Amino acid sequence: MRPRLLPAGTLAAAVATALLISGCGSGDDWSRPHAKPSAVGTPGPGFFPDASPAPEATITPRPGSWDGVRPSEGYRVVLLTTGDDPQTRTLVNAVTEWAEEENVSLKTLTATEPDQFIPCISSAIKMKPDLIISAGNDLIDPLAMVSPNHLDQQFLVVGAELAEPTGNVTAADWTGASFRGEGLGMSSTYDPATFTPERAGRAIRAGTAAVLKGLTGLVIWID
Image (tube, rainbow, N blue to C red; front, top):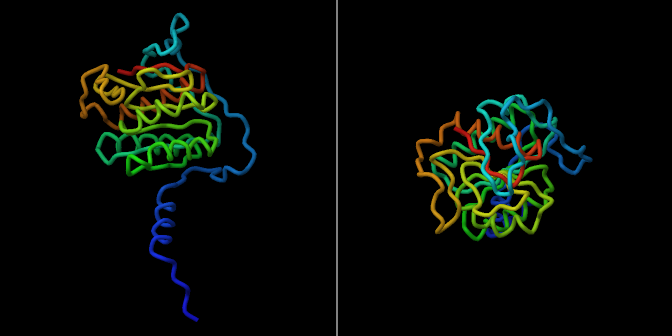
């Protein structure tokens, strides 16, 4: 008996779905019970600001002060990404490498068209991860729309920032990055050359350390 062939549209949809979500690290079955995540380790001197920062403030931790902090094993992260520019690819690679090094359970959602941005964000939220990391400037405006309606979900934006973030959205930024949305311009001069693997790696570690230690709703500025 010949195998039944699926309609072209159904097959294309199945392939698109398969390509949309990918996982790495251990503990990838998120249907299992999951212990509340915690920070392992202690930040070094200069990580915390001298005074409690105001909401939406920018703080500049001492370089390397975040190195002693990592998530507990099995930390669940969804990486939201869009764009194939070198800057975004550098950020995505940095997140993937960090996840592998820290035994983070990572799933990736990639939006290839503008009408997929909000559905991808919604899909990430439904997964109930410990953290959603965003890489790609085109996701900033959709995140600004969706994140205030899901205050129990933590977000980390890398290499960009929301103009008016709620307390659940943290950004890790530097001079040469910091896109804030269409029509708002940059809070620093944009320079694609600043998106180096080394700097992106520091941004991921500084940003996740801040989230794990409760410094959320802020911009974490790195040199």
